[in-house]
Length: 291
Image: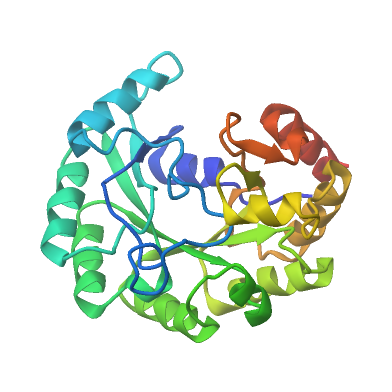
């Protein structure tokens, strides 16, 4: 079963393999600072989903240089994406965003920016900034939707409605920005059909790319408390592969699949433990898709 992978997209776009460098720009989130809530989404780690990012105390340039050193033995082309990953990366005064984003985009080895954020943190002035940056180098905006189902969204404390996501996609697309949508597979009380509906919906809504993420139970999260109380189950590897196969089948060929799974930091992973062996998981997924 063929699909358009992010690696292939990058090779088509830049002519070579491109590596992501995870950046922590020191932002917070409206779901943590009291604007919407204080506990964050129920599954979110204390690192704000940026557990593999660099140290927020360092400048953007220093983080990029550190990231380059981590993969210097693997890469020859010297092309990288600065991935603003931790917390909500458009949740700050526009001048603060401009300073940090421009520091990254002006770096000679950075070929693009990928900015992870919430759909409810994209006011007009931020959209204009992203449009301006996109004239310099490609910009990807990653939206953490996770599910289209409002009951699940309420359970995970997402803090915004599906309508807000639709508006964000429309505004970003009107500005010429590449949109990537995150979907979590295996959220509590969701059936396979529910997950498929989320994938189908975002593809129809106009997303350019999609990240399929396995639900992880991580230490020091409210979801971990739910798990230990027996209120939450996680998928088996076989179940996850079966869901992935069906998702890939309905994703249009022009929608780039940025991720087929994900791995939480091993030191914080509670369940499912099979996900810690990411190489094995990806090998089995790719084998299932090729079969």
